[in-house]
Image (cartoon, rainbow, N blue to C red; front, top):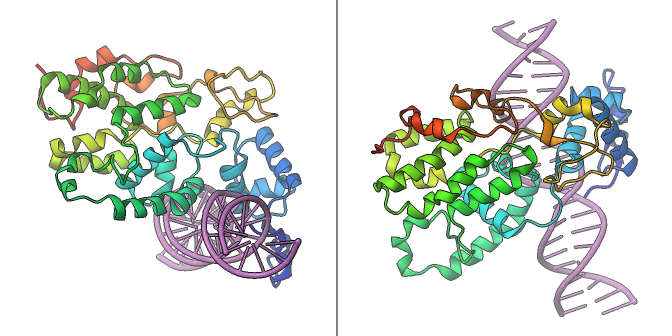
Length: 329
DNA sequence: AAGCCTTGCAACCGCCGTGCC
DNA sequence: TGGCACGGCGGTTGCAAGGCT
């Protein structure tokens, strides 16, 4: 925490920064929060320096952006991280490293700052303790589960991670029927037998779903190379990377701003209520790939929010998945 | 009760990439 | 092509609150 502080205190006003000299630093007051919230809900996201100016905030745009993203955003989750979230963070961190924004993108309602803080203050410490206390001589042969069993934290199966993502992604309102189908197949329980055709088929369902949500993202792009060179060996861990969260609320808000204040909030799936907001995530109409940054042209191209994914159709196009090199009978 | 220590986390800082002029 | 503004990101700081002695 920082004390509210006027920049003028220790800043020498320059000729071209008379306005900057008035910029505040430190903690945000409730009044400032209110101004920013009001402005954002009325006007949506734009140029942050304009927002700071137009909202009558003596803050730099950067500060406004940070405040909004990390604290005021309506879709933010509040409260402690659930065990599933913890496990997901650990899992993602094992894959992504300190790319907090990437991790946050896969944890709906959580910010990179929040995750970073949580990692540095809690998880890092816990893992350190666990690593020193639980290492056993037999650990070496359990490399297949290395990503999921860290210290004595409860191992979480990939489908759990998937489930978590599905649940917590509900605010994005993408129909997850396809995902549910994946879970019904329980593909990960069969992963130990990689070359089992049934497992492969189930796996395909999962990868289809994942690909539909995740392809086009830079990370998957990176991993495509890995998969190309080491497909089968890496399939498990790659498939366990949960889908990206839908785009940030700012972007969603930009779409739904017209509705703000005009519709009641009937989104029962969204736990993150914001007293004076009326975001309606269930009725947004724009392409899935727009939300998810997809640029490929698969059959999901024209899917819209609320549409169901045509898994059967996708299954017919198995060969279109470049990172699957096994054959389905 | 008071002082010290630890923890959690909001916010800042500096760097980098991108777009515009 | 260089300079500037801006947004985004990861690392770091420093305050408040709670715990401990």
